[in-house]
Length: 295
Image (tube, rainbow, N blue to C red; front, side, top):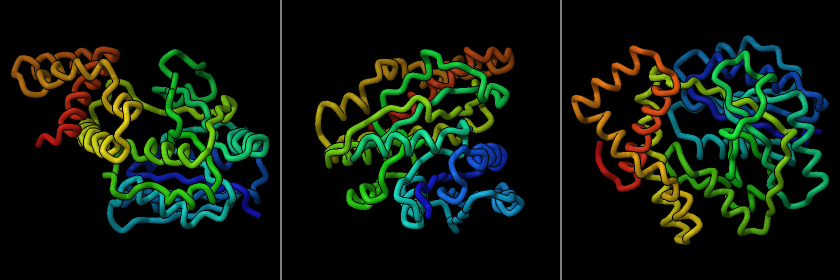
């Protein structure tokens, strides 16, 4: 009997997805009691061939979208296909520890009607997985982060799943968590349900995609507040004081001197500086989306 369904949306992350799946294959939980559902959102990097080459020790359900539908619709497809009583959400750039599933379900058996949030540690190299300790930058105050969270399937069905009115990226998980909490579910944190979140620092190889995602996140943030107009949500979508530095990101994007400075920093390969400048640019795009400014 399947007890847990692990849902992973993915798009053009073939290599890191393979590492993610290998970690989920290597779980201490009985292999016949969990399944993995990969929802491929129209990848073009031969993700399907990589999946076909695997020999999973547990049930692996591969669902491929014919065109890009985005994370809300992709995760809803996963929920619909899930056979487990509990749904564990994670992402295709997360490498989990062997006790990951066991720890999520252990807490569900102790605490009824709960959202179980696992722990995330950010890594910039795959060699750090399993070795790096938690730092101050790994703090998360989210009540529902689909990189590492679990909830009963019947609760997701009852609340209606992810709101598909949201664009493909940004805030759709927090909005679902808000509705679950309004329905009466409580939050519990289990640090032993640990995942390592792989993110390259100062990487501009996919900057165009990051900018578009951040713009969508801004649009979704405004929609989130419109659907739930209260101070708590306003603080979530606009409360980051660093958004006040978005004007620097605009300067880096639009001013000739700013562009030259950004290129200089990239050539010097100063990782911490590159990461900071990219973050400022993304703040600029977030506010563009929030105020529905056109690119």
